[in-house]
Length: 237
Image (cartoon, rainbow, N blue to C red):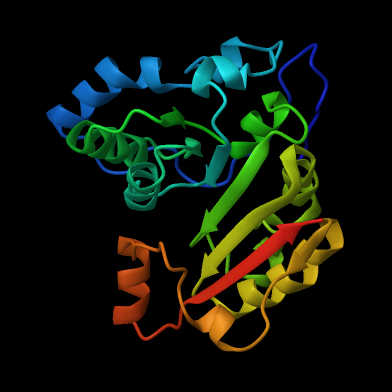
C-alpha cells in the first residue's frame, strides 16, 4: 500500500474492499443526506481536502478526552460507549457506507451528541489528528484478511500502528477484539513493537470481555459459528 503523509496534497492509498454493499433503505439515505455532514469531524469528501488541515479537537468536543474507534461496523459499540461515557468525545471511522448509515440511525435513536463520524479510512484521520491527542482507541473485529498473502492488509502492521502510536497519549489504552487466532498472533507480535505494553496478567484477561463491553453482531456471528473471541488490552508507553 502506498502512502504519503505530506500535507501539500492528498496521499495516494490503496483501499481494499467494497465501499458500498447492498442497497440502502430510503431511511438510511435520509440519515446520510441529513446527518452525516454535521457529524463529520472534517469534510465528508476527504479527497476534496488535499491540505489535510489538522483537526481542532477542542472545537469538536471542548475539554473532553477523545476516543477513536477504528472501523465501527454497524455502530453498536460506538453508541454504547457514547451513552456510558458522556464525558468523552468519540470519533469513529468506517469506509463502508452501509455501516455509516446504520450508525447514523442508531445515533438518532439514542440521542447521543458526543460522537463524530468519518465515512472513510482511518488513515485519513491519522493525517489530521494532533500528536498525543487520543486517550483510548478501539479495534474491534477488524477485517481478518485470512489468506497469508493478504496479511499485510491487516490493521496490525507498521503502516497503521506507527501513526496510531503517534496520535495516542502516553498511557492511552488500545483495545483489540478478534475471533481469528492468527490475528491474535500478529497483534501480539506487532503491537508491542510500536510502543505498547500488553496488560494481560492471566488467561482470563483475554478470554473475558471488558466490563463495559457490548457484544456486536459480528461477535454474535463468530459465536454462532464456533469461533472464540479474544479481548486484548494494550497501554501506550
